[in-house]
Length: 311
Image (tube, rainbow, N blue to C red):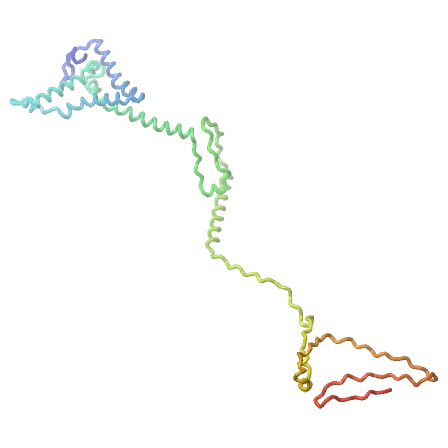
């Protein structure tokens, strides 16, 4: 409607001054607010990406005359090329179509500011989708962290003296008590505990590094052997006691295995019995006390007989 039913105000390279009606001014203000401020933001907020891509495609047309318009010498010479002239006409029409809706705003903000509004369509159509996507990403990350909190990682030194494992909180709205700052005594106590645990770990590592000591074998203790005096006497064969001559007198046919004589402790000596003495005058002679002769002992030349002493 702006292009077909109203003369152009902004042409390529110049301005054709004219008056604007009230209806044209209202429509220019509505067009600028809707296509520059409202539509790019609303389409990005409602995730209507195709609207933003359409606005970006429309807004990039204003940049084509700046980069593709041919030089004036190629279209104003005596023999200009047809392709260059047609390209210049197409680019002039694009420029006039893009600038016509903002022409009436020149009475409010000036010609330079009004002709520069059309260049904001393309960047704003790409800016709002990108910004809202980043905001949504961080908002979702924040909400997921609040709904599913993870326990904080504790250092190794403090974990040795910590209490039971921290259980994950219940999903949903969780109200926790305010955290109170630790006192200086608690801070120093935790530091001492961590230092002691570190020292214990170093001592355990040093003891593990030392070679294992050989264990001494246990020597079983047995009961002491009985002394020789308490042992039972061993059996001594007779041949070991008898002289060789006595053994030779025995006949060869009568040879038998010598009897074993067990040696035992000597029997206690018993005093000989003394008969009572009769008084003189009684019948018979006086009482005779016979003393037994000692047992014969063998000698080299033979047995020696000793008479019995008679008293």
